[in-house]
Image 1 (spheres, one colour):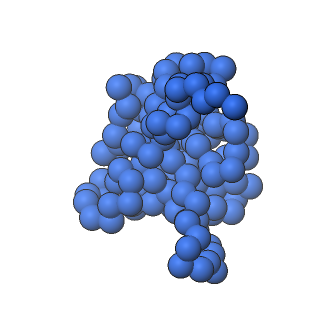
Image 2: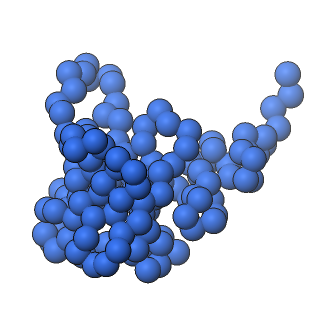
Amino acid sequence: NEVVLGGDKDANGCLASAGYTWSKLNKECVRIFTGVQLLPAEKVESTEDEAVLAAYILFDKTKDNAEIFLPNQDESIILKRESEGKPWVNGSWQLIPWKGFVLKKDGKILYSGDGQIGSTVTGSDDSEEIPVTE
């Protein structure tokens, strides 16, 4: 079999092998790990070789819309908020700006993070310091 470089592009032209995926919110190929990282709320028993499956958040320029990328899920979820300080919502999903961010579904906390890019654990507790993808 012949290997074609760039042959793993998705329907939107994003090169998956380089870590790119399509952002419905920003209408471009993005690396989701450049967004805010959220870790599972419940401690998962894992071996040293297993990776922790994080969720990632990307925001639009207005910060009124958030796109959630969940592990092992093909489609991202777009959430909207009414005004600054309010949660972003889509049906039973809620992203709450509290000590970083808390992601809930049906009232249950699934993921949380300190609001920093990637796995950084230091920084401001100001929940409105939201990184914006450009």
